[in-house]
Length: 198
Length: 256
Image (tube, rainbow over all chains, first blue to last red):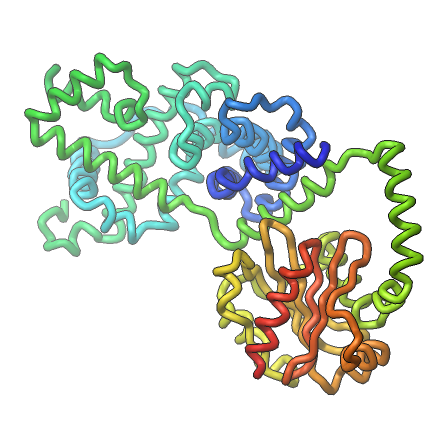
């Protein structure tokens, strides 16, 4: 990489730094891998910077390298493969009618004051995201953190746009279910006057 | 469109992925339906809150800065023949003209500090505490060093970001090591007390000398040293000398 490319590369990195850091942090299965993931991704990206087409989204281009580095790092944890395999299999909906109703009530309550509810659930949200299957998690994070379009996400992961839409929908559904569960477990609804202790 | 049909489009609508026609229909419906408007707004807030909770942290920021630094250092192209020739001439001129500077750069404190800084760059050294808060770094050194460590508060405003600290040794002398980043480039700051300067004979002579330069250049690295009321400050980094001087001066004014 010559000096001009290096300067340009550094310049392009600045506005996407926060998104790339957060993406790597939440995509990595182990916190200990984040440093390796970032180093591998940035080194690969710097070596292939000649392939980057000016005018296209640098963030989408860079997040592709972070994705590959994270997937490779996650693959090192064998127990995760088993977890991912189980999570990737569509589990039948075994919720009882009462549980569904309870979730709906919790969700409706959460929508009334999402900031207040979620403000108390920082680590739980991260845990819920971490519990998503690899591809689904990646798609959700690319949208939520990377703010990429469906087309860009599809290009990053080399999957059809329809898959992105479907996985994003499932990710959000699963996250909401998990968050409702947490809200109920922690009694956040009851704290608000005890009207929804189902 | 009816309410239940409209609500099926919440996610793609919030993601700005719908065609203009559907967006228009949704906007029309929301204008006349308070319940759907509230549902869309709540979903938007929910998404924003979830995204906000998935932020980065100081540890990841530090890892990013190091990764950027190494990626850029690792991607340097091989110099061309004419560049080597120019470098050789520059080296010759530098050696002849800057002999005195070179010999001073060999002085013991500068040499040892530079070696420690390079240890960090080579990832052979880890920080004992990672924090961007000066008071956290200061608290870490309490009871570990025979002198108080005071970190300046005004450096962040100048784009000089505190990353963390550790206790380290230069020539068997315990010193405070504080790491900063400027545009992802690491800067090592070493603080030692005046009594320990006796271990660095050459530095003790040059630091008090009126003709002694403040800064030295060794390869791409710049080293700036200064005396303060409490002892000696030494900053090392691959940044302009003025940046290191700002750091050293800030530390010196903290100890007065």
